[in-house]
Image 1: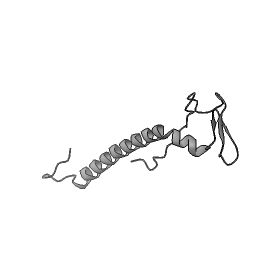
Image 2: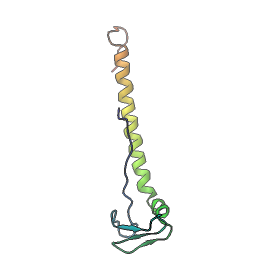
Image 3: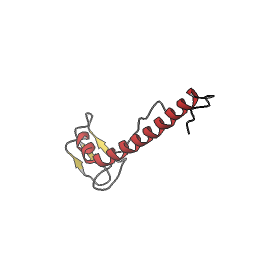
Image 4: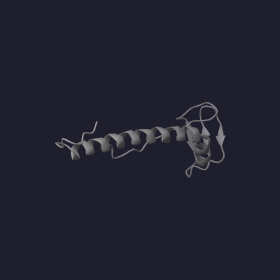
Length: 91
């Protein structure tokens, strides 16, 4: 099983869909999309809020991946625990 399930999600401009052309002040309280000049006066927190659907999709994918990996890990451990036992078989 993986030890690290961290992900990097590129936030997108809700107007033009650009995910790499942002400019901000030092404390990220003001952000501008350089491609379409959309201003996010709420800064980084506003951009995160507007990309909530994208973030939630990635969280759901990660949860599914984690559940599958956990199932594989548990199955393998059970197989190893009962290896050689003629009465218990795990498939």
